[in-house]
Image (cartoon, helix red, strand yellow):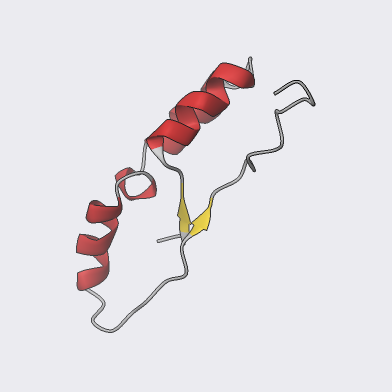
Length: 69
């Protein structure tokens, strides 16, 4: 399990700004634990004291942005 997360609202806004990346959106929605932290925590329960530092997944927030955004 990767330590990345991609909140649904971020992905929605990202795809609104970054035209032509809809396929990327399909790929990142596939593993539920990337968007659903409760699902991630349930998976982590199987690993006992395992912990993670949660990071925002690529693409970064500034990648598709322009100075106007």
